[in-house]
Amino acid sequence: MYADRNILSPIMSVIGADWHLSKSSLGLMSTVFFTTYALMQIPAGFLADRFGRVKVLVAGYILFGVGTFFSGLVSGLGLFLIVRAVTGLGEGCYYGPQYAISSQALPKKYRGLSSAIINSGMALGISAGFIVSSYLTFTLHKSWQYSFFLFGVLTAIVAILIAVFIKDTRPEMKKTVKVKQQKVDLKILFSRNHIFTYILIFCSLYGFFGMLTWLPYYLQTVRGVSGTQTGIISSLVPWASIPGAIFFGYLSDRITNKKPLVLFLALLGAVCQIVIPYTQNYSLMITGLVIYGLVGKLALDPILVSYVAENTPSIMYSRAYSIFNFAGMVSSIFAPYITGYFADMTGHLEIGFYISGALLFIGGILFLFTNKEPNAVASAANDYMPAAQ
Picture 1: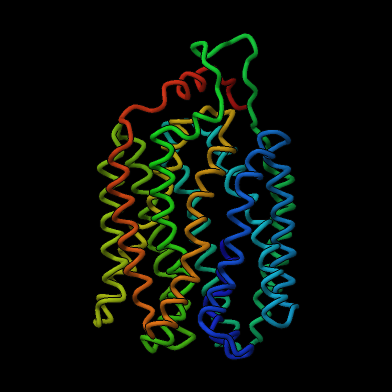
Picture 2 (picture 1 turned 45 degrees about the horizontal axis):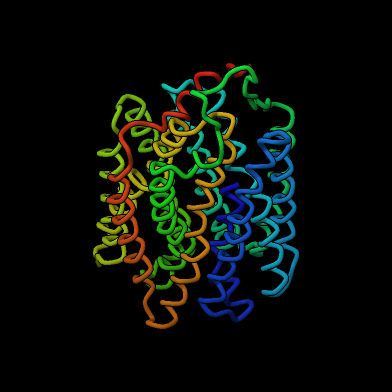
C-alpha cells in the first residue's frame, strides 16, 4: 500500500514536465488521493465491524491495486486525478480493519512492539516506492508509467494472500453481561484521551506526508541532488524508522505513563522538521533525516495505536482506528497542496517544513492534557470480550 502511494513522489518532476504542471497542480495529485483516503476511513471502520474486517480489507486492496495500475494508463491531469481518487478509496479500507484484527489478536503487553513490526511494512513500502520508481525512471530510463503497472499487479497478488491467510477475529459482546451498567456507545470514541490523541496524529501526519510528497522534489530542485539519488536519500526516513519504531514500541509496552515518551518524540521530531530545510550543511541535513526517521511518525504511531486500544472496547476497534486515522489523514489532504501553494507564492519550499515542525510541537504539548488512566468503561468492556480464536 505504501509503495503504491509513494511511486508518485520521485517522478513528480517528470510528470510536471510532461504535462506542463505548476507546483500547486503537482501537490493536488496527492491531495486528491488523501481526500478520498480520509473520507473512506470512518465508513470502512463501521462496515468492517458490521460485516467482517477481512472482507473490507480484501475489497480495498483489489480496488487500490486496480487504481494503481490504471494510474499508468491515463493521460492528462484530469483523468489522473480521478484514478488517484479511486486509489485513495481503496487504500482507505486498510487502517481500521487491519489494526482491529491485530489489536484483537495480540496480547496487550505486546501491542506497542507488534504495531511497530507491522509498521515496518509501511517503512519498507515507502522505501520500495521511492527506490523502484527512481531506479526504473532515472536509471533504466523506463517511462514513469512503468512503476504503476508493476505495483498494481503486485497489489492484486497481496489481496489474494490476505483473503487466503488472514482470519477475522471480530468479537461479539456477551448479551448477559452489562459493563458496569453502562452502555458502550460512540461517546467512548470521543473521550478526552481519544480527542487529544486524534489531534496529535493530525499534527504528526501533516509533516510526515508533506515530507513524503515533497522531499524528493525538494532534493532535486533545491539541493541539486540527482534523480537517481533522491529515492535512496528519501528512503533514509523509513529505513531509520524501523529500529526506532521497534525500540520505542518495546519501551512503551513497559511503561505505564506514556506522556513523557510521546512528548520527547514529538518535540525532537519537530526540531528535525525545521533543521532539515534550514541547514545548508549537507551532512547535517542527512543527519536530520535519519533522526526524524528514528523518532518521527513511524516511531510515534505504534505508541498511539496501543494507547487507543487501551481506551477502547475491542468490539469498537475498527471504528476507533478509523476515526484515529481519519483525524491524521485530514492533515495529509492539506499538507501537499499547502506546501505547493506557498512554494509558488514565495518561491521557497522550506516554509512547508517549518509549518510541519510547529504543528508537531503543538500536538506534543496538547497530549500532556490526556488523563493518566485509560477510559474505565473501555477497560471494563475489554475484560468481558471473548478471547480471539
